[in-house]
Length: 148
Image (cartoon, rainbow, N blue to C red):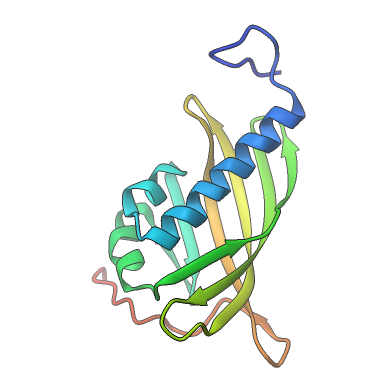
């Protein structure tokens, strides 16, 4: 069982769940504000984001976030399964574009890892829910990658 740096009592399952939920809240607020540094801070150093048929490492996040539509990231309560210093989860998302108020809905499938600095996202994969009811990783994004 892990111990908190600030406490002498063991961390509980509730402590872990609350910490992960706060991590995900920080992600949603940072995305809403376009705060790339804050977005990066919720990921483990080897973290990645998957959507639009591709996986993006952390060094591509600044350009990816810059190219993303702007608006409100309204995230629901995640379902989290803890397994020691690792965890998996699914979190619903409703994105509302700021100028048109058009919505995009879907969910994130995540993996989390406990680091010396606390829980962090290791992977975050977006699945969109289409009007047809289809679930997919999204259409190609306007973001242009430079790697070959």
